[in-house]
Length: 251
Image (tube, rainbow, N blue to C red; front, side):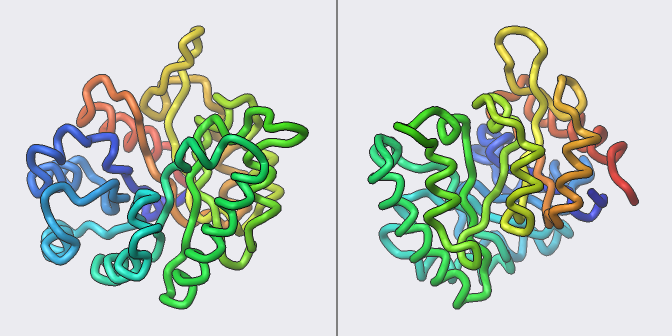
């Protein structure tokens, strides 16, 4: 991981962006991030946001786009990515009805392939972001295994959330090795050592960052994205994560 590959998933500071997106982006820039991954655009449009991030020296490493938007108008999603000069569009979560059985997951994979092809035609990389449920038993397999096997490697990539992989009972290191260049992005948040296994800022938990980052580097991951689902103090926590990630960089 290099310093210029570090980004922040803005879901971490969602309460702040809901109240003041431009002001929050300025705070993130002042803390030291040079890239952000969007999770919605607040009350602004991508057209409004682009000059703001340009003025702050921020780049858009990626954007989480909900299932309904992909289903309704994927072409508009791709247009938004071009507006933001954003190379990565990510489906952040599968709806519950697509997790029920192997057939439904295979149906989801068909949609991922279709959206991935549209993105590829528009020079955007399409990725799926995991949580923990993908690694739970699903008949004789898992949702994760079905998605990997039923999606086209040239069209569908993954944003591997290392915390959620481990929370779900899997080991992220073999996934990084086995999927190689299908993993374009990784989410970094730490895990508490107690029974809660709560998510923490990077560097404050038990995630084996040195070995994980070695595997991610070997897989040619493009972006290393700090994120917390449940921050204690969002702006202070993202500052802590950035400091820890910089200490883990290789230049």
